Length: 98
Image 1 (cartoon, one colour):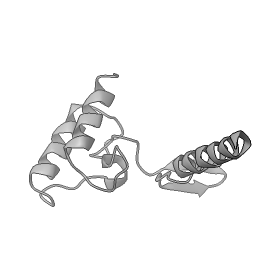
Image 2: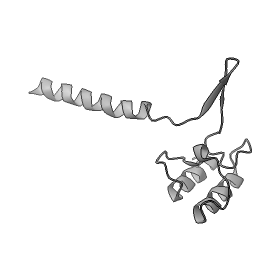
Image 3: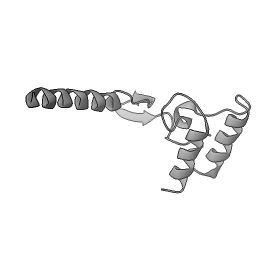
Image 4: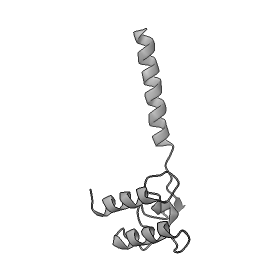
Protein backbone atom coordinates (compact mmCIF):
# COMPACT_ATOMS: atom_id res chain seq x y z
CA UNK A 1 0.00 0.00 0.00
CA UNK A 2 2.87 2.34 0.84
CA UNK A 3 4.55 1.70 -2.53
CA UNK A 4 1.29 2.48 -4.32
CA UNK A 5 0.99 5.76 -2.41
CA UNK A 6 4.57 6.73 -3.26
CA UNK A 7 4.08 5.92 -6.95
CA UNK A 8 0.83 7.87 -7.06
CA UNK A 9 2.46 10.83 -5.30
CA UNK A 10 5.38 10.80 -7.74
CA UNK A 11 3.01 10.66 -10.71
CA UNK A 12 0.90 13.52 -9.34
CA UNK A 13 4.01 15.64 -8.70
CA UNK A 14 5.30 14.97 -12.21
CA UNK A 15 1.95 16.00 -13.68
CA UNK A 16 1.87 19.22 -11.66
CA UNK A 17 5.43 20.14 -12.61
CA UNK A 18 4.83 19.43 -16.29
CA UNK A 19 1.94 21.90 -16.39
CA UNK A 20 4.32 24.67 -15.33
CA UNK A 21 6.86 23.66 -17.98
CA UNK A 22 4.38 23.57 -20.84
CA UNK A 23 2.53 26.79 -20.00
CA UNK A 24 5.18 29.28 -21.21
CA UNK A 25 3.62 32.05 -23.24
CA UNK A 26 6.56 34.12 -24.51
CA UNK A 27 6.56 35.20 -28.13
CA UNK A 28 9.95 34.86 -29.75
CA UNK A 29 11.58 35.25 -33.10
CA UNK A 30 14.83 33.71 -34.31
CA UNK A 31 16.86 35.60 -36.88
CA UNK A 32 20.46 34.79 -37.83
CA UNK A 33 20.77 32.53 -34.81
CA UNK A 34 19.73 35.27 -32.38
CA UNK A 35 16.62 34.75 -30.29
CA UNK A 36 14.67 37.93 -29.63
CA UNK A 37 11.62 38.39 -27.46
CA UNK A 38 8.89 40.52 -28.98
CA UNK A 39 7.89 41.90 -25.62
CA UNK A 40 9.51 42.13 -22.23
CA UNK A 41 7.58 40.79 -19.24
CA UNK A 42 5.73 43.80 -17.80
CA UNK A 43 6.58 46.21 -20.64
CA UNK A 44 2.92 46.97 -21.32
CA UNK A 45 3.53 50.03 -23.52
CA UNK A 46 6.41 48.42 -25.46
CA UNK A 47 8.91 51.23 -24.85
CA UNK A 48 11.72 48.89 -23.85
CA UNK A 49 11.55 49.37 -20.08
CA UNK A 50 9.25 48.38 -17.24
CA UNK A 51 8.26 51.43 -15.21
CA UNK A 52 5.37 53.52 -13.89
CA UNK A 53 4.27 54.34 -17.45
CA UNK A 54 3.44 50.65 -17.95
CA UNK A 55 1.41 50.69 -14.75
CA UNK A 56 -0.56 53.73 -15.93
CA UNK A 57 -1.16 52.16 -19.37
CA UNK A 58 -2.40 48.88 -17.90
CA UNK A 59 -4.64 50.74 -15.46
CA UNK A 60 -6.17 52.72 -18.36
CA UNK A 61 -6.74 49.52 -20.33
CA UNK A 62 -8.41 47.77 -17.39
CA UNK A 63 -10.64 50.78 -16.71
CA UNK A 64 -11.72 51.01 -20.36
CA UNK A 65 -10.65 48.03 -22.51
CA UNK A 66 -9.64 49.05 -26.01
CA UNK A 67 -9.08 52.70 -25.06
CA UNK A 68 -5.29 52.32 -25.32
CA UNK A 69 -3.02 49.79 -27.01
CA UNK A 70 -1.09 47.37 -24.84
CA UNK A 71 1.36 44.56 -25.42
CA UNK A 72 -0.92 41.72 -24.44
CA UNK A 73 1.91 39.21 -24.07
CA UNK A 74 3.63 41.52 -21.59
CA UNK A 75 0.45 42.64 -19.79
CA UNK A 76 -0.83 39.22 -18.69
CA UNK A 77 1.61 39.00 -15.81
CA UNK A 78 -0.10 36.18 -13.93
CA UNK A 79 -0.72 34.10 -17.05
CA UNK A 80 -4.47 33.63 -16.66
CA UNK A 81 -5.36 34.99 -20.10
CA UNK A 82 -7.12 38.07 -18.70
CA UNK A 83 -5.98 41.64 -18.10
CA UNK A 84 -7.24 42.67 -14.69
CA UNK A 85 -6.33 43.99 -11.26
CA UNK A 86 -4.34 40.84 -10.50
CA UNK A 87 -1.99 41.75 -13.36
CA UNK A 88 -1.88 45.32 -12.11
CA UNK A 89 -0.80 44.10 -8.67
CA UNK A 90 1.88 41.85 -10.17
CA UNK A 91 3.19 44.79 -12.21
CA UNK A 92 3.34 46.99 -9.09
CA UNK A 93 5.35 44.31 -7.30
CA UNK A 94 7.63 43.92 -10.32
CA UNK A 95 8.32 47.65 -10.49
CA UNK A 96 8.99 47.80 -6.74
CA UNK A 97 11.25 44.70 -7.00
CA UNK A 98 9.31 42.90 -4.29
